Length: 440
Image: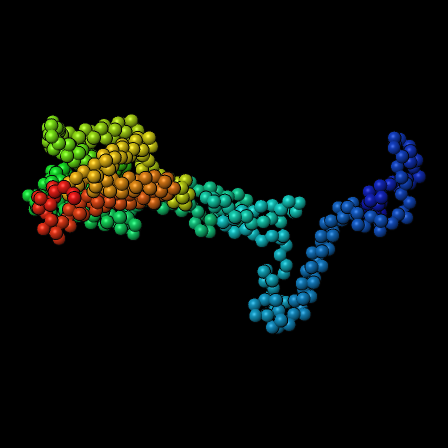
């Protein structure tokens, strides 16, 4: 049996046949080389055929050789010079599994990564690759990663999915608290000015600037400051429906009051000219009609917006994939920008009329104050457009609140600061002949 095995091996390695007295060409179509027994193994020792034939024996030889070398190193190891902790050596009679060589090409991949095979190498050779964003692996030596659901996100180790945190402009946040406090305190300023005007309603400076419209304007400014509060807190569906509408209507009432004051200033001056029949247009009913008409158009626009494409609450997972941004979708961006554009139109008309009337010969000409207030108002909202388009998440809402507060403060300062200064600190100038006297 041993001789037959050697002969078969010899014939396979050298691609020949032992004839044993048989004819080489007998029944074969292709002549076969005869084995002589004198062929040299040195010619094939390093060939692929030799390695393929003996690979299992060769691997066994290498394994035994490595183990023997390890045992020899273990036997000759000296204390304080060993390969383990503090230079210790292993006990040759009590060897731990983690002390003889590992028979793997790569270490195991822990949870949070996956195995990626190395091209052209054995299956035991692989790399540990990080899972992609939003994916985890919760097992050792996992070959694939699992994607978390839309409302979950991996922990820092990427070994399990955790519920995403919800982000919105909250009263608990420092930014939300600051804006809410500023809004409430700011709303008190128009209320205090209103009280001041009521107490001094008989003085010339209050009467000369249309007392009733000034009171309406101050009340609308209080609403403008307070409407920013509906932008803070969890954006419920009802809050999404109302916040832009309240903002638009409050500012429409404010700007239309200023527009009515502007037109009344021009009519009042023109009515004093000889032969003018415009005195009937200076009555309070005309100013109220202007305000009502402007407010009604905005009200119709907002009602149409809510009827056709109303705002709604949505979960935004695209801006920041690791959190859920709870926000209000405006429903129809066209409706939102149309509402804002209508405010721009009213403010622009007020600015143009006030600018043209700024040189009317009254000593205290309110058209100048309206010109500055509308210029500041328009500047704030023109700056808001690119800022809101570039902001993300909570900062988009915070940017709109800032624009509301800034534009409201611009109107308070430009329209009422000079009058309050005269009432409180220069009462000597609060007399009829100084208010209505022509400029020199």
